[in-house]
Length: 100
Image (cartoon, helix red, strand yellow):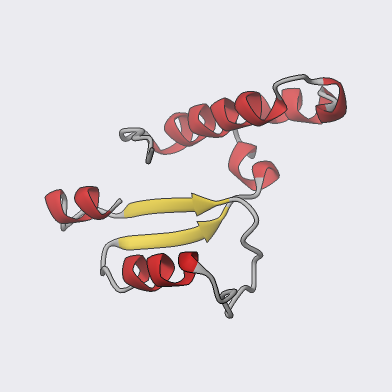
């Protein structure tokens, strides 16, 4: 994220985080607090909560999301991650980069 921010300083770098609520203003006191603080200080980095329903809205994947039962999917984490990536690229274009 930092590299993308520095290489493309005039373009937005969006970081979607699962588990971050809509109104989170206080970070837990752990190692992620420093990372969020550092990233949020970068002018072109935007950190948003990842809510699948909202991400999949206005894409062909929303209907699939309403029909699937996550409890019956063995690899739901991987499937839902792929769905989010595809939906974001479908709606906004751009480049997907993995952070690990």
